[in-house]
Length: 297
Picture 1 (cartoon, rainbow, N blue to C red):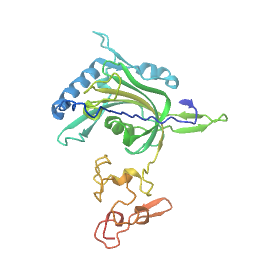
Picture 2: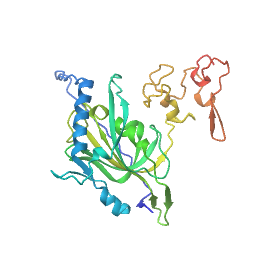
Picture 3: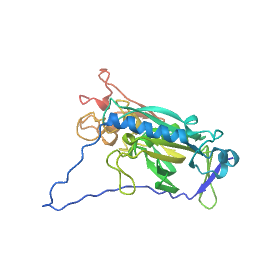
Picture 4: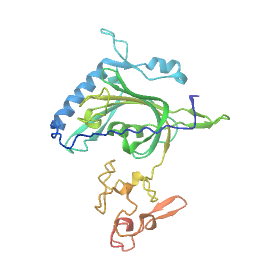
């Protein structure tokens, strides 16, 4: 049985970057961003070279999964017995959110899927994690479980965490701590276009860096950001797993944060029906548009 134990109190990670300048200071020169298509090709080549020449400590996982910590290392030159990451990863295709003509191969590693529930792309998840560069330098980490709002993290990580499951069993111990059993373990190799691109946060990150996030997924929580009764993942009207560009009434507030999605003055929560936890969407005039998205109702 796979177990891990932590306190109930969970940290919420937040990043805030503030930029200021004097009123009489000249406007700074802003370097135009690189072409996203060309950068995607370069990023994929760099990531695939890494996967070809590195491996993870899979033998340690097989020998002692109860005390496992995911690590990467370079395959010694001439070694033909170590299994490279390229033979152990899978990928999913993800469209760039800025340039829809660009599609990425987003590679990820499943060490253990987990035995519990899968989060949606917009849910909350409880994780520990490491963030590293392609040279394996650490730029961010937490060994204490933190609560992610998946809608607010880098796209590459947001798109992969839902491929895993949380703990198969969570036990509340007498001292108030939690024991997680059979939780998800994995990693994702993120091209800069699904990471920070030309605007990395402060630290040792540079523009256009590729990223590696390894993580443990302990728990998931269904998100309803605006508390209107509709889970946030269901407010993805155009089904692109990106909530910001769904704004039915054009008021500048995305549906997942808008308590009146169609702007008709009647709150969304009064234009849907929830019976025994099941949500239905009435369409009173039968025009094919549910009432909560129809300003004429």
